Picture 1: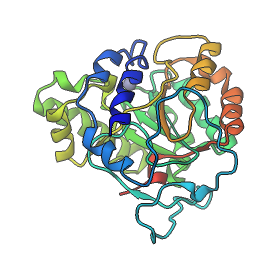
Picture 2 (picture 1 turned 135 degrees about the horizontal axis):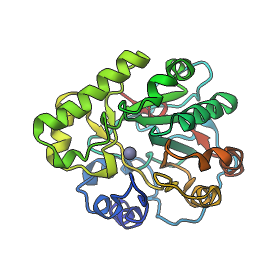
Picture 3 (picture 1 turned 45 degrees about the vertical axis):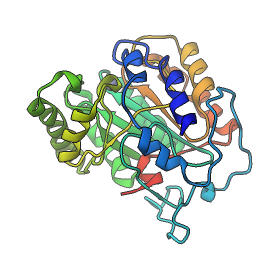
Picture 4 (picture 1 turned 90 degrees about the horizontal axis):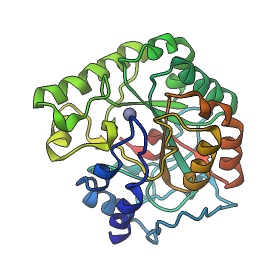
Length: 291
Ligand SMILES: [Zn+2]
């Protein structure tokens, strides 16, 4: 769908910073032509990539797209949203399908254990649903395991695979790609008791057909990219974080943030207000997609 292709232009500016610095390359990735096209083939007016917020005031939780009309709603936990899940498209995803009020707020890395702790406490206090794409090499993931594990077990926080130590997968040998994903997979399973498949986020957004095929060979069939960034993989000010949230917390977006620097933790209240003011409902990927 041309609307989707057009978005790649907008994506090019998103990944500024140390760890998210792959913006330009990300924009030219093969990424998700067929996959996202398949998703937007649901009865959806192609959403144009206008940065203007479109608050959707009276959305019910079942406003999510449902290409399978008679699926039974499947809550992921007693506290979770009741959504009709849609089939996971093949290939990578950059946004959530259809029209609705859903926001997939995802956060990556975890180089600062204090940020992991504070994000998790924010989620626990507010019910915000998040997806963490973690690198098991960072000690904060083991340090915060007891705090985080109940939220992971309930499904409020989903864990995705971001490689073990934030490798650029396109630069590795075939066995190196497998090792990065499998090692992190094993860490997540051992530490949190969950299976992160099929979702992985390639560091810097760098992936190609070879990487995707290798990942899929061990069950990681869905590269998760993004359509909007808090741009906090490097150090920016709390006000800048808020500015990026105002720009990108929009319906059906997958937004990327980072568990690396403290400023975001100073503005959780404001970020929560933006979600509420716009009538958005935070979701994990498992809330949206059937496996
Ligand atoms: Zn990262």
